[in-house]
Image 1 (cartoon, rainbow, N blue to C red):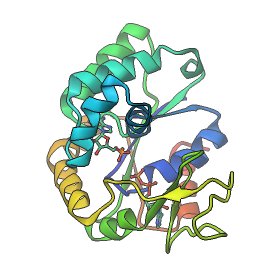
Image 2: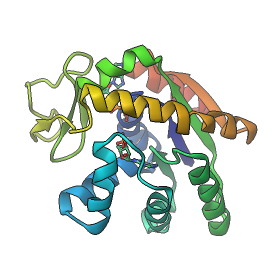
Image 3: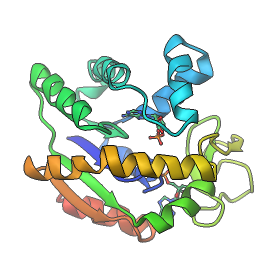
Length: 214
Ligand code: ADP
Ligand code: AMP
């Protein structure tokens, strides 16, 4: 199954992907995680991306598209993938269409996790991520059993540098202008499945599986 998950920053995409990729046995491809990995390793791509990420802006399309193209060609994507955080602009979506066409594969569905903007600031500023395994928690809504420690691997939890109030507001503005038009793009292609993301995590998962016929 080849899926794409959309929604605003803080909408719960990463959280759902952790669950869905296990449930559906498909590969998680998060462009945000890939950029953070490049920043950590100090690669050329990471150095370029960091400027944009810190400013709450999108990394230029050509850099993202090349990275995703390369990732999709790797063998672990052959059995199915869940793209998270890509595409974020219409040109990225068009590039993805061309790439998938060339590869002779199709998207089965595009999930849109809808959450009202007023919920997102609290979700993002309270987000904590595991340094070791990348699992996501929240200081109020998805607390780890031991404060500051990952439930899954015991790793240390940290706050992303772009999860500050000023950067979050910028990211939400960018989302509304540049990414929201993709909802209509995929609706027109008949691929869009909408899910209410303003509910408990487990209920969102149930609704996602239901719209996928699982
Ligand atoms: P995204 O990947 O879309 O940016 P995340 O999955 O990282 O979003 O979720 C953002 C924050 O909100 C995290 O701290 C996460 O634990 C929390 N969260 C995710 N889903 C829900 C939900 N349904 N209700 C409340 N909090 C949630
Ligand atoms: P995320 O982890 O999805 O919240 O992404 C974190 C940051 O990485 C974003 O604010 C962007 O700066 C950058 N980024 C991730 N995915 C993309 C994309 N598809 N296009 C452009 N920039 C991206």
